[in-house]
View 1 (cartoon, rainbow, N blue to C red):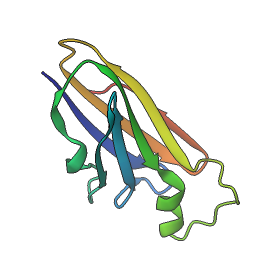
View 2: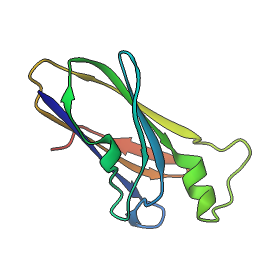
View 3: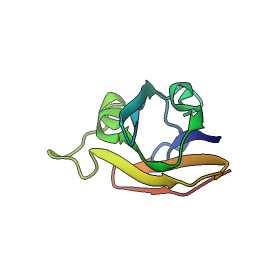
Length: 111
């Protein structure tokens, strides 16, 4: 089976993004929803039973930065960051990190 994990790092403040909301959707709708912990990880999204298909993680970026008192324009440049990705048959472990600030982000398939 295929497994999934994620890790969110706040590049504006140089630390894990604790308290950021996110949701995982798959071929048949929402699978899980959660909030990152003090290490920027979301145990609710850690899966080890994902079938091949198209998936997405929706990260609530603007809500997170506003909760820290960061003043954002209305509308914010980044509101929600959605990472669409595919899981292949026998693809193994998929780690989807997000490095984010109010004005930019990057992601990749980690290990």
